[in-house]
Length: 200
Image 1 (cartoon, helix red, strand yellow):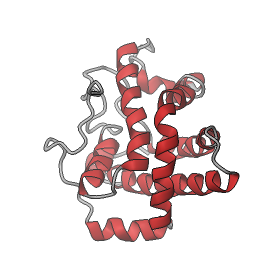
Image 2: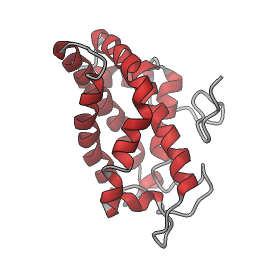
Image 3: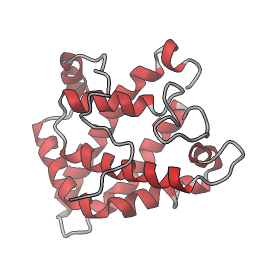
């Protein structure tokens, strides 16, 4: 049995119910163009990415974010010192997020946890899960900007197990649609003045 992931609470009763209706989620999926064929492509992507999540997150965190001080500071102390345990714990959740993106049904539990992910990036809850002192929030502009990098850099990993170029493209398009959907959901917290005022 896999070791529990620190702070990963998908499906837990501790996670509040999202203030997004199933109807709004369904409409948002239509807006993003995410259809049943894309969900099947995501499941295939999950089979390919499952064994590569550590390498992917290391690529993102150590290979890209670490070289960008305005992004790296969000996993460091307020005096810019490394927080290795915090980074390790959040990396494991980051790895699981890749799997959840591909394999979880986009149901009420998934919706609730999407809003929880956003909450943990705003001043409402950043640092609380791991009990650290770091920046109080991650600006939404940086999240939106980095999604483009994640979309671009995940594609080569989809092609590492012999999938055809056509199938890699199909999986990659489905992944991009899902991330567009997720960012749209995270925007709800960031656009709420009571939850994230001034955190653009």
